[in-house]
Length: 320
Image (cartoon, rainbow, N blue to C red; front, side):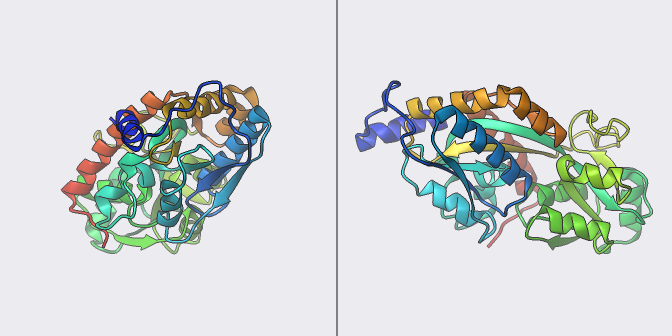
C-alpha cells in the first residue's frame, strides 16, 4: 500500500515523523495545478486554497504549470520537498494511470502520498447539434456507416476524455478520429462550432452549453442518471452497462511526506469541504464533494488504476 511504502521510505531515510503538535504551516503553501487556468481542476484548487488559507491563517496560492501537458507540473511536485508546502491538485490521469501509458515517465504516480479526494463529476457524451443521432445507439450506427469519419476531441492522449472515447470505440465496435486539444474549453468550443463531432466533457462545463441549445448530450458516464440533467440517460441505460466515465479531483503530496502531516492537511481539506458555501459552489458546478481519509483516497486510487489499466491494456495504448 502507498501509505505503508511512505513509512518505509521515511524509516530508510532516517526522517523523523512530524509531531501532531508541531506548527504547520508557518509560511506560504503552494497548490500546483498541472494545467491551464480556468479549468475545473483550477477552479477547485482555488476554492480549496481559499478555505485552507482561512483555516491556517497563512497564504495558500495556486500555481498553474501547463507546459508539457500535465507532465511538467506533476513532475515538479513529485520532486519537491516532502514538507507539505508543495501539493498537487490533479484530475485522474497524472496520479493513477499515466505510468501505464508513458514508456519513460519522469515520476511514479504510485509513489505520491494520497491526501484527500475533493470532488467528482460524471462526464457527458457531448455531440454537435447537427450530428444525425439523438441517442448513443444512433451514434454508433452512424459511426459504423461512416467508418473513420467521426471525430472526437480530448485534452490529449491519456486524458479521461480520450480513454472514454476509446472505451466507446471498443464497446461499440467502431473507429473514430482523435483530435487532441490543450484543454477542455477549446475542445468543447470546437464541438459547438461543428469542427469536431463529439467530446466526453464534464457536466461542469457542458451543461450550460446544453441548456443553451449549443450542443446535444446523448448520455452521462456515471452508473446512474445525473441529478443535474435527469432527462439524459446513463451509458448503461443506452446499452453499454460496462461503460464508466467519471472525472474526479484529488490532492496528493510528494513521496516521503510524513503521515502525521498528511493527516493534518486532510483534516483541513475536509473541514473546508464541509463548509456550506463550498458545498454550494461545487454543486453549482455539477460537482459532488467527496469526504475521505488518506486511506480512503489510496483505496480509491487503487480501484481507479485497475479500471483504466484494463482499458489501456486491452487497447494496447502506449505513448512514446
